[in-house]
Length: 287
Image (tube, rainbow, N blue to C red; front, side, top):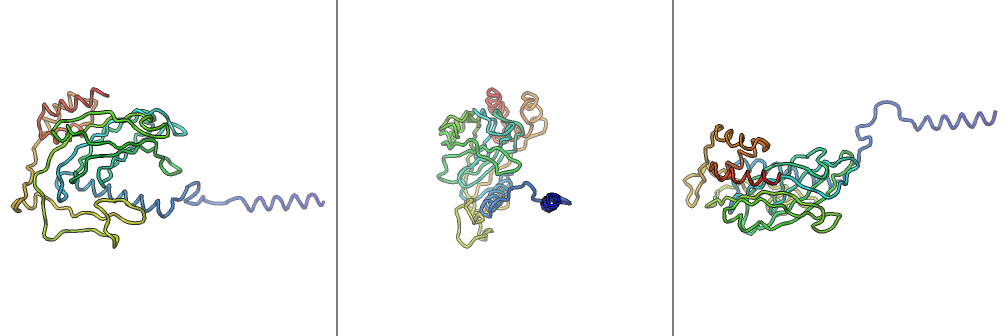
């Protein structure tokens, strides 16, 4: 009888440990710290603003030109995921952050073919890339990275298609390589507005588009160039009209390249078909 009583108590104690009903919303989820949440919010804000100004109708003040960057693909030396990795890339130029989509199951050979238009400020001569593995139940893991100088030939009007070495756990320049295409278009003149619009969310100013712990970014004023065509010292770049037929003709020559990439390459070459075809040939030759 005494043994039966002990067993009954054990059963009752075990029943108290059983969860009955719907699972909580945070079940099996790792909650990020306040600092991690702030960093994530800052990066999302910077990316969202850059998407807004990179459409071509807005240009920040004091830029020297626009750098078009195609993040094409990577060849990594090791798979760090439990299954196949889901890589994506964060590109940083100056204090601005860009991000590609995730290549799900891209593993060691992810492909993105994503183009970004990046405004260059005076003194910016380098760029960096960080490749992350998107994780479902933990923070995304950084698996490879690198910082590189912008080739001088790019500023001379050449389109550069190059494989850059990646650093990671395997060692410096031993994690693999990433294919990046660079093209530069100078922007003549700068724009000054008498009443700038500034978004400030911290009392202490931070450099343009910066992402720092525990502080939201401070953004430089951004103005539409086209709205001030008669401003002294301002030379607004006339947009190039590219027909759908021209894009279709070039895209038929490169069916394996996304049509939107063909369009942006043609825009960066101001509608010049020969220059566009040469740039796409360079991209396609390494595919």
